[in-house]
Amino acid sequence: RRTHFSTQGSCTVEGICNMTMDSNSMTMPMSDPNAWATAMNNLGMPPIPMTGQPLMPDFDPNLGMMAGITPMNPMMPGLSMVPAPLSQELPVIKEIIHCKSCTLFPPNPNLPPPATRERPPGCKTVFVGGLPENATEQLIMEVFGQCGDITAIRKSKKNFCHIRFAEEFTVDKALFLSGYRIRLGSSTDKKDTGRLHVDFAQARDDLYEWECRQRMMAREERHRRKMEEDRLRPPSPPPIVHYSEHECSQLGDKIKDDGKFAEAVRVLLTWLERGEVNRRNANNFYSMIQSSNSHIRRLMGEKSQHEKEMEEAKEKFKTALAGILAQFEQIVSVFQAASKQKAWDHFSKAQRKNLDMWRKQAEEIRNMHNEQLMGIRREEEMEMSDDDMEDAPDSKDSEDSGVLQAEALKEENDSLRCQLDAYRNEVELLKQEQGKNQPMRSEEDSTHSQQLSFLQQALQGMQKQLLKMREELKQREAELENSLEDKQQLKSQVQNLKESLQNLQNAHNMQVSETSGSPSTGSAVRGIISTFLHVHPFGASIEYICSYLQRLDTKINPSEVEALLSRLPCTFRQELTGVGASLEKRWNFCGFQGIKST
Image 1: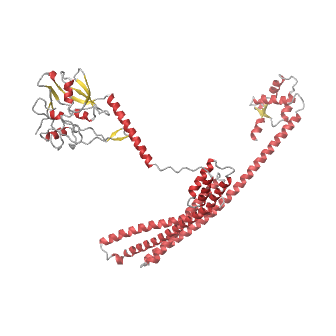
Image 2: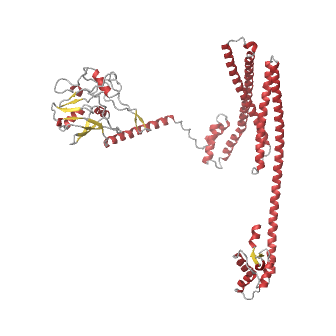
Image 3: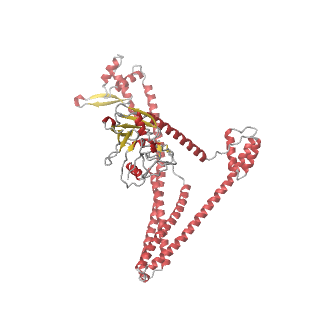
């Protein structure tokens, strides 16, 4: 069945135009409710109640948009051309819409829905294309005014226009008309017909209003969060009173009270930091500080009492854990006795399965508690070993390799001690099991005895290894001490050698200064020869040296120069170069070699 949104008369949408936008009630003429379902199913939207709810956008500042706002439903109350939702199983059919001066024919239902662009944020403007050439703004107002209040129409000469609505949800109602064919009156002229195409349009006014609305909601959200933080913020501590004689006397009484000491000492600390102490009240402050010091003994006593309680709790827990472990051992013994052939054959298959499962569970729990008890004992022994190590003097020279080896030996010693404790516990457990179970067969006795012998042998081996490691540790420590003493001796010897070498150099310099008496072979000549030989790294003959010196002083004799060079063996050295007839004596400068060797 189909229904038209019109009455027989000149205006076919009078009932539509008279419909109000009230969100709580809606009145409209509806001859057949199935027409509402067909139009709603055409939009692919689920049914909604006929009474609309007011929009309450849920602003999320992280998204920057209003979360919770889904695309507006064109079947919102107040839209005349939208049917009421019934069932989505009905066929999708759009109806003919009659207006005063035009008629809208629905598109072919077999065609796909018209394509639209992405919706801009805060969109209130739509693009309408495919208008008849003879369409006017009055006609556009008549057709799209049914969707909602229109604030502006911008019509072009090329059969399209832009329509801006007052609300955002009316845009979705206008998109419902996309694809309809429009005909002005009863004319079949091409200028009086067209196919509508409605799509979202991007307008700066819409974007500006949307951004203003977002900023307003952001401000409200910040204000709400600030109010919530102020509500949840803990109250500020009370202000510290200023110093006075009356307050000082009251604070002295509070410091002596154990219950009010924490608050009073905070006030005293604040006064000291403010600089309230002077010559007149120094005695008062001294008495309050003395009273604060008297609480140290009380606090130490409380600490020792709590430590004692903690030790008692540890002992109590260890005793209870040992008792629980003994009971687990008894339960495991019961399962082991039931697993023997004398009793096992009398149980059914299901009972055997349950007994086997229970036995495994009991053994797992027993092993877990046993490991926990062993861990507690191991921690206690480690604490005792740490105390022993703290009493021994620590070596500060950790740079040598001997210190690292000693630390490695200590770690191995601790690990061997832990393993030895584990073996001891296993031996004790095996002894307990041997005494409780009382095996009926000699084979079990032999296996237990073998296990005990193996464990005893392993225990003896571990003890021997532990003693050996201790001896090695002592030897390494003695070697380390000897190496440190040798190092100190070597350092002292090196220092003595440096001092003796410096003395020899000073004596040699004094001897050279005494032997250089003549003015021609004095310190100036030695300096010139040293400079000359320094720039000749491969040496120079005595003739070459004298030729250079005779340019400066013609009275210089080669024999005097050679005698001067031979008197200074620490500064000049003579070398022979060449072979046979080409053998030549050359003098080299070696003064810096002596300095480098020192």
